[in-house]
Image 1 (cartoon, rainbow, N blue to C red):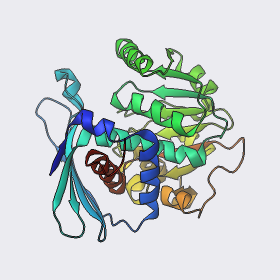
Image 2: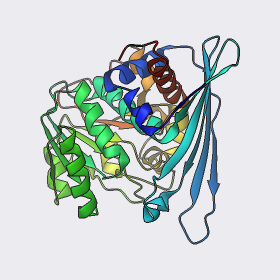
Image 3: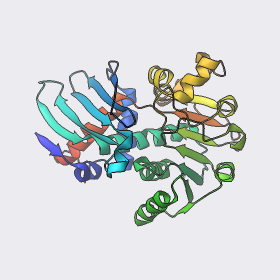
Image 4: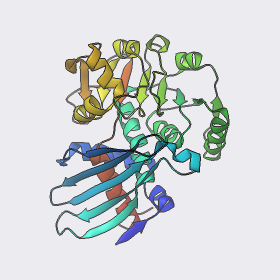
Length: 317
């Protein structure tokens, strides 16, 4: 059985191939039982979360991710997300690989946003604003640059020193990023606004979004969290990765549904509808699109299979 560490997992999940693998998995007959989502008290700290996410393609592969999310781990200089993915054969049940879960999660999350942007963002998008300076920020900038001709990147974060650290890492990867202090003005200029934060209060106001903008909401993974306000929802054509997940877990969808700002029918499509052609995606140059992602087990399965195939030599590097 292969065991892939963080670096090996990263090397085995090149962006272009990962985006395509996730798209193909959304087109497949993948089975996704309801995931287990457990809040866990941590005395004196923010509540932690345990996720158990199973999925399988009949006769092909079986997988399950066990993930622990500890929001205050940054105080210990540890990753917020720690976990592993166990991949098995769907024919024999043989265990094939253990894949590092944090890197898999970060990369598949960014790749899924980039896949959605392929259908929802302007094909001429050149400017991207990254809101948030955590682990996902670098991944999101890299992934979105695969599907859109991005030329200018900016980043906003509450902690400037963390933003400066992220900019240094981005530039080492060949991404020239500028720090912005005026969030409103930065949103007004951006073709793609991607948010990956743990915010409990809206950061992005709908009045700031320019015609044709695409709003990519990746953080705020609990119903009590939120990255966009009601006006952003009102002005946007709303899309989600999965209706079942977003309507239950994502505060940017749950809260507007509860208040009546958004109805179930207002959600235009989920990602499977886009990849199957059941919905065309962006409908016009001035349309504002909003994509809310909470993560789906099939995305992890797609990434784990790709990582296993690369690491075992089934796919040439």
